[in-house]
Length: 154
Image (cartoon, rainbow, N blue to C red; front, side, top):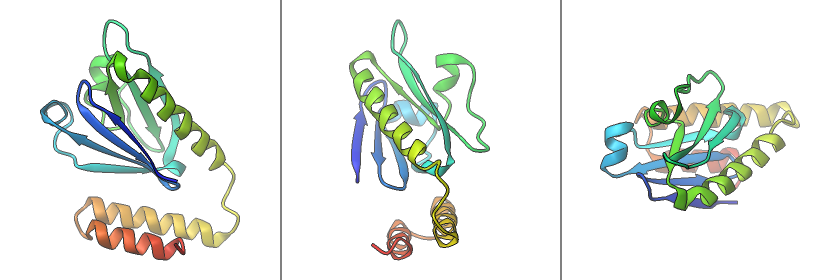
């Protein structure tokens, strides 16, 4: 399963939902100013502990992913603009954000069941380690994808 969600306002964000987790990719100057040039961020479902959605009103809305050991911003919309685990959206993209929230919550709920065996847990830990190496530019995206497919027997 792979689903792509695109939010274009206030800044362009592409969220790819896979069987493993979500990848957040930010584009444009607004995101560069608010978050910085962070590149793509992948969050495994096993690390997401909660999803918060604030609907758009007089201000933009946002969807925030609380992760294990994370330090999400707790200051409303203004603080959310600086949080790398938060996606801002205008009223036009609220339905997209709500659908994304629903899919992520379903996946984190299905992942609450412990891995069936020790091997699956080890595979997930190895994939998380590989993702850390990818984020640190130690391995390439191609190497990450190749090893992930090998670990998952795809």
